[in-house]
Length: 81
Image (cartoon, rainbow, N blue to C red):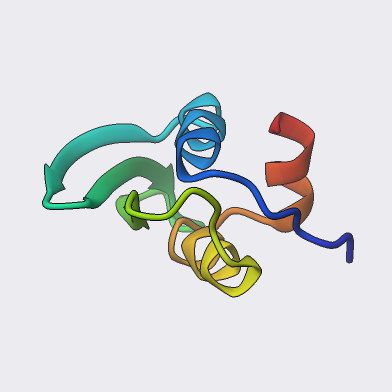
């Protein structure tokens, strides 16, 4: 698995928007994004992720957790970065 880079919150948001996520709201310094996915049985499910905006760069573990919340693979994220 490729390594995740240390990137800014803003660059993370832009990349996730390329992947189909939409800004829903912001509460304080946290931005909430959502995306609709089709499950295996054909039902639509919503997945979301919370991105902290208070830091210039996100820690690698924080970025990994954001990708897990949004069900985005590391390879998919890096391809759209």
